[in-house]
Image (cartoon, rainbow, N blue to C red):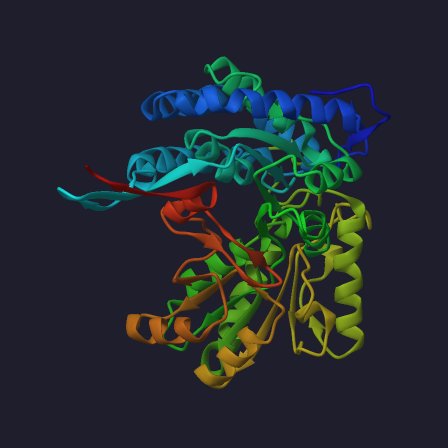
Length: 464
């Protein structure tokens, strides 16, 4: 939904800088009016039987899938992901249908007692209106994490999509409305940052879920301060991998480098630091460099392209500055960007592997969110744990070994939201998606995701 506000929500394609979409932002009064209608309509939606709410959400997801042939090139135009990867529908379907599968159990009353004297139980009730602020890097998958369970739980949902992927919000709204979810229950609103913050300050929502940068997360949390509005924040990351001496090196290198470079490194849980046991370090680095050099950087609309442009030139410039600073400080860049003619010094950025980096360097401490990874030699599990924890972030950590007990022990000491063994860069909808430190707070997906999207009500009923 667009309004009469000042034009300025403009999506420029990273492919060539052309205008993909432009929308007028709603004025604060226009937005408040539409949200008021959603809040008024929400009790009626919550009375729709749960099984029917589930059916309509599943139907909306299926309708979205039918758009995939159009959505994939549209996404490439908006944010640069190559068409060869087929878009996000596989993940969207997996997550939404998993949340639908667990809904009846997750939302069922917790029965405490039903005796001759008392009935005691705890209900899960919807918050009312839930605001979902989705990022551009995976606009469909990150949005569905909260949109699907929030609707199933009986909430009205207001979606604010990132300007870089404006069309994704419109696609989601079209699919869900055609599936029978009322327009006043699922709203895709064109909002600027100032209006969004104002709406939160004015207590327009029962819950806010935000995925994005640490800086923006602080703005959201500050806006909510004193309103007692629940807030879920998935913010930055600097996710580590640890390759132990017994790891399957070919597989570890393939998977970790995919986790570092897929989507041009623009992944919330992308791998940015890899610590490798001393005895296998050199072989791992050689394999990692070969993988990086094998990528085809170019126009994401071409099927041979494996690495598209970053979503905006300024994002690529941040990575270039981090790499240059690290090299000046003693790190070694192992990939010659000259091997990638498409690297234009603008949004198109060649992949890079760095060694001899340390934690005094910005590239080892600040989120890069680009196609670069640092590989560091370590001499023990203790050293690896200390380095993995020497970070302001804590989203995921990826451990590579054949020893399950060792991985569980190390994982217990790593300050992170998710521990992987022999995989990375994956979101399991049956497990809680959460983080520590500057990565944020709260939790999405799983039964815990439903708990965050509802509030408990205790019922203590004395009979007779």
